[in-house]
Image (cartoon, rainbow, N blue to C red; front, side):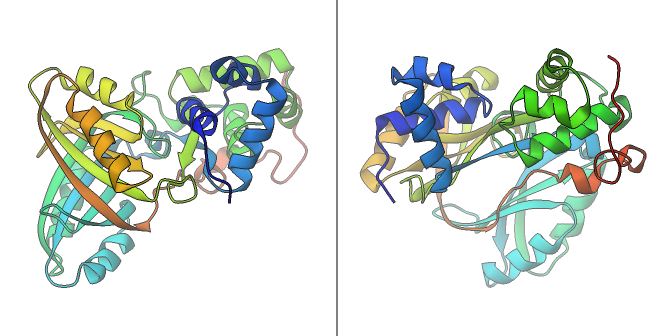
Length: 324
């Protein structure tokens, strides 16, 4: 696998912000030709440095609340991880070292009451010695977990069959052209474009690149927790702009901000942390090393979980064109 250079990292950074960013926009950002940009992007995806994913908002499936659990195991952390990963609310799990906890577990819940019930159930496991909860309020950047919905009260019932089919098609190919998508739903390109942009702007779906650190030349991954002396949202927004930072969320619990970063080496990692510490408003920065991703966070599969009444589409019979 070839080594990534500065242009590659610029492309990956742009994809993390917008997985459907155009070749022209990438060309403008990198100053490379469109042909060169297209070739580099294809190589990055083919070698597995990143995967562009379409992540529907969990709230559409009755999972409006997201949380990070910092878990100290009683005994072998691997045994605790097996139990936690098997739990119905778990959406991801990492083995960690260098902090007070052994595992970082991601969970989704219907609401805060449901979250409290899930946490109580997990705390009762004998393999769990201590468990701290970070309840996410705003996910600034994280491809697999979109931010809270800008449109309040949005639910599965407010999407029609065309919207759901577009979500399916976008999960199949997040960078599919509007022409291809329009053929899939029987709308004009203009109508399809308006629909897709509406879904993106409403926060129904987020399309972004998930970086695979080791294949992207970033073998070291760390997690971090921040307490602030300033507005957490402002500090988090600045952290999200720092090179190497891959995930940032604000919320409440043992810290004000939680996130992740990746680096090429220990020297690079020290530089990343140095830049993070320069962000104004940070009171305390706690970090830990990710030893292994035991259960990667993955988007909810629309094809499997969308409401039954929307299933009569391309999956089992020809799509009837919609005149909108």
